[in-house]
Length: 102
Length: 102
DNA sequence: TGTATGAATGGCAAAATAGACAAATATGAT
DNA sequence: ATCATATTTGTCTATTTTGCCATTCATACA
Picture 1: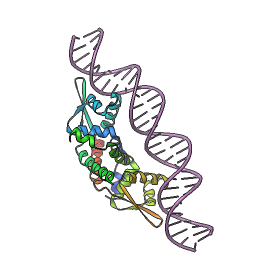
Picture 2: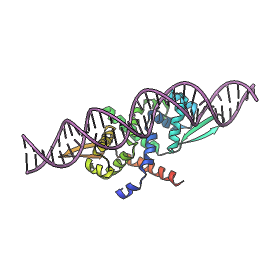
Picture 3: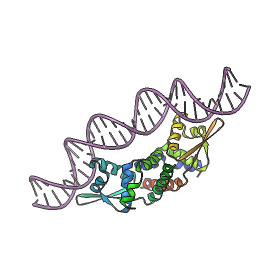
Picture 4: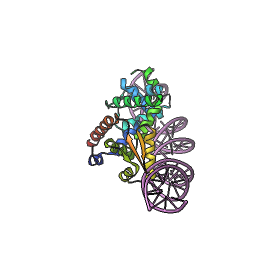
């Protein structure tokens, strides 16, 4: 990739995605949603935080284009819509494990 | 991946890595370093920011385990040490491009 | 030794983020 | 219509991050 290409990339938009992933609670959400969709209240139980806080985390992820929501009855279900996330998170995880070993 | 696995993952450490990538200037640095190592002053020219700011960005990336530095003479050269970054950043880039199209 | 250059660090002010509570909204059940 | 539950949003405070300036540190060279 040359500098010309680099300049075309919207780094602010990319940073928004990374920023959405840059929080332990939101990473936990993403991992949990890799298996199957979950509603906000299930995620609240997982995060053990105020539901308003959970809702805000979810809106950050949704706003970054990582999640989709679907309302069914009283519940709002969130699911992951970026499949290539898994590979990278595994890579990061391996990296972190390596670093911690030393 | 089940919940038992999830609990074993060090989300704080992973978040640190993501946080390091969660800034336009640092993303630009990472992209630039995909080709070859660069010294701080070259990166300053690229970012067009105060060298102290650039140095801080680099220390964030280094501290997250993404970069290595090597001092040669007056110059400090930084290089990328996490090859799997490229795949993910391309994925994010495609994602962002898709989103902007709509 | 003194000087010049590259880079890192201390400290500060502005901006962004996180988390909680209260209030508002939406939906389903009685 | 009323009530209960799920979720979102407004608002506030505390914390973190960013970016710059000034200073310090490190290295090369005269």
